[in-house]
Image 1 (cartoon, rainbow, N blue to C red):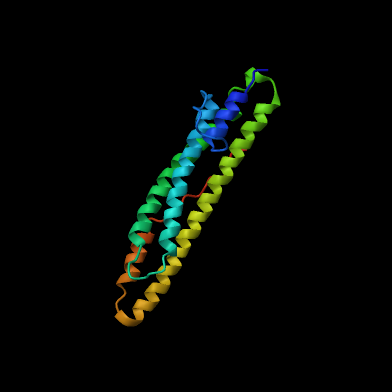
Image 2: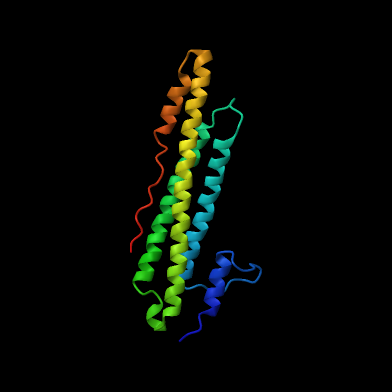
Length: 177
């Protein structure tokens, strides 16, 4: 069959498994789709890190709800894109993509491995993001109990409820078999 070594090396570079200094070889449609999903996940990973920073900050003077809401909107939007591209990638693999040319199982196994790795990474990010939002909600509850004792006014609670309304994290759809 055709030698896919160069494509494999290109994918390795896209995923950061190899030194990035040499220019990547031209990628197949599979490589381009997988690379795009991976880059999307690099972006959502940064948003996840930002959320984790916001919700683990120890000083209570400023309520991070506004920024948490902003980061959540971006995460939901970008994760939606990642999931759509991921579905396109899975459809491409299911339709045979480049496999008809090969008549061998090697690339097939490699592609399935890449798809599974991307799906695991997506699921982990969504779970971690939801955990961050729960942490934020608990922090708000504690902060409001503390300030409620002194201020006698429930402004914090109302603000928290309002911003929490659009913090519905993305539910990853069950991967198509």
